Image (cartoon, rainbow, N blue to C red; front, side, top):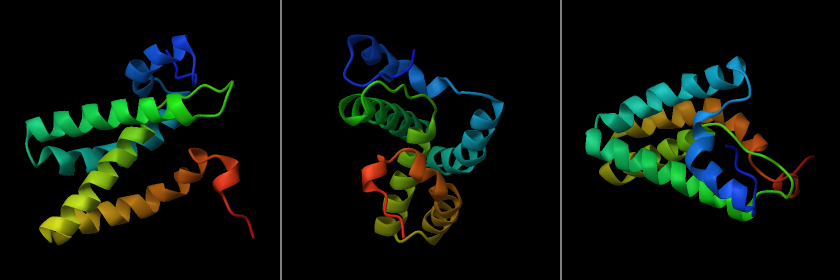
Length: 127
């Protein structure tokens, strides 16, 4: 099930859409960034990993369902990748842990160009 914003059918997609991808390239790009960030999250323990993963997947799904563009569908685990990134950057900053912060910043910089794909066109500034 995909997330279709503000539709009853789209509510089911909140739970399932992170596991669906458009094609192999879409899946591969997400996995390249998911693995190093997920690995850093799981270093804090399995319980932390499960909490962060479930929270970010549900929050991402609900946010897309609430504010996504009408008549569109959304799939992929990129919301979880950004959730991991935000968690690790915040953790690295407050714990003063340069490894968490540094690796997260590098992966975030590489993955950041995909941010354009999740922001509405009105929020993007072109020169």
